[in-house]
Image (tube, rainbow, N blue to C red; front, side, top):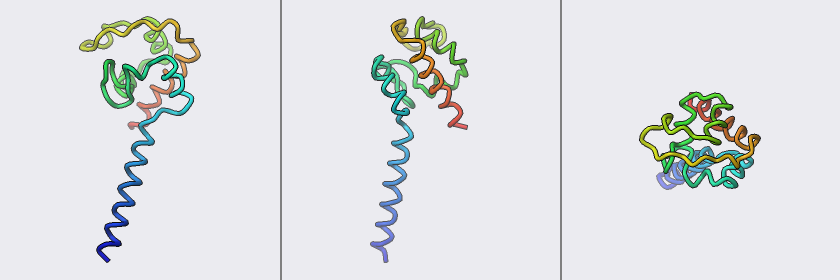
Length: 111
């Protein structure tokens, strides 16, 4: 009986780990945009890398248009303690808006 209990516990833990890992990935369409524009080189969902984690950005409650503006022309005063982000004017507004809406969705999921 003890071995069966261990097997069930292992299965449950594996399921929980896989579920948690799955939640840490952006939707495929957003991930493609983040990769295309090298966003993931400096930002991750939950962890500070070079720039703030996307969840930290979500906590600021910027409007999507504000995030788009900050992608195109960053303002270092918004993120003291971080190196200034390079301006990314080459990111099409449509892509930046999709990123911004996804970032804001992270705040809704944390509630």
